[in-house]
Length: 84
Image (cartoon, rainbow, N blue to C red; front, side):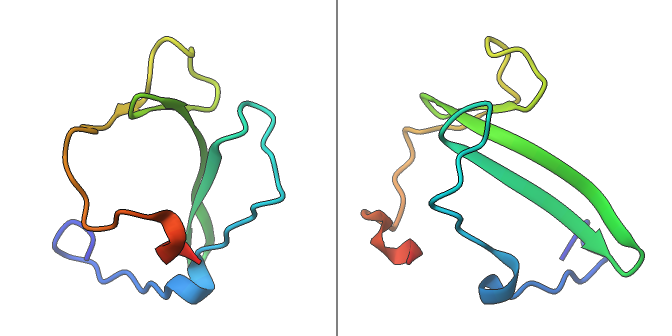
């Protein structure tokens, strides 16, 4: 649900692609996101994980993270093996 108004269809097996052999130019630990609609691409953005829970958006200054996560929280998954 987006904004408590729009249902967003999501099927992990079709909408998530792990490209473990692909390295992005800005950093070895990067993620590309794209939002599509029936009329085409709505948004396309690349983020790089730069450590300490910080993500830098492609094109932003490295010292000015786009997002900083609270890495002190515990997560239910203790290993990355569940991603396979």
